[in-house]
Length: 202
Image 1 (spheres, rainbow, N blue to C red):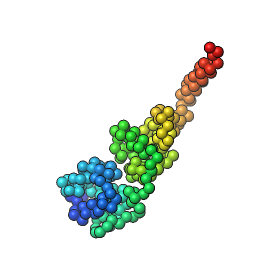
Image 2 (cartoon, helix red, strand yellow):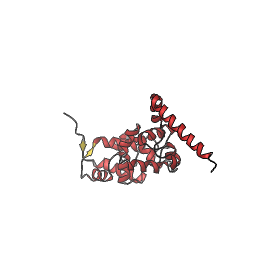
Image 3 (cartoon, one colour):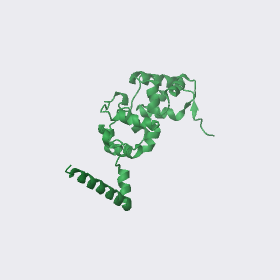
Image 4 (spheres, rainbow, N blue to C red):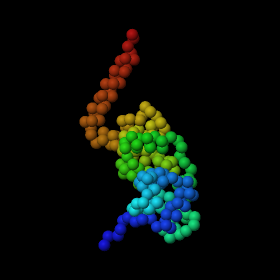
């Protein structure tokens, strides 16, 4: 018989979730965003108005680095397996806001965004919450997956926001000689026109 995938949260687990919320200053909305569900769903889980997806408990522990023994069976203050993300130093260079804005424009939740660029949901969540910097490798994945320029994402260069020359585009051109040739001729023609305009004595 298949194990039940949904259950009403027990009082001890409920108390532990509330303790984590208190220690890390979390709202239901923040928990929902970090764990891939809505804030209202978190609320119904905690109040017992709705059965919770059992896998969500493990996801909650993973996101906030909670000791699962404490979470399921312990009492008292939360026991963390490592420094909880909400207490880490935040990244405030503007790249997070730009990333969040483009994700919302594409109408993706964090889970869908992570899948689209090929990283884990937990990693993506930490980036968007500002607790993990965007590496060059991840920036390239975002460039390919979201279609925005890496230099815009990282540094706010508006001139290089759209139609990025991403690794995917470069690979495509290397794999298609005819397209490289066509692009090369178009660029040469454009340069010749600009040179001619610059030499016009009028």
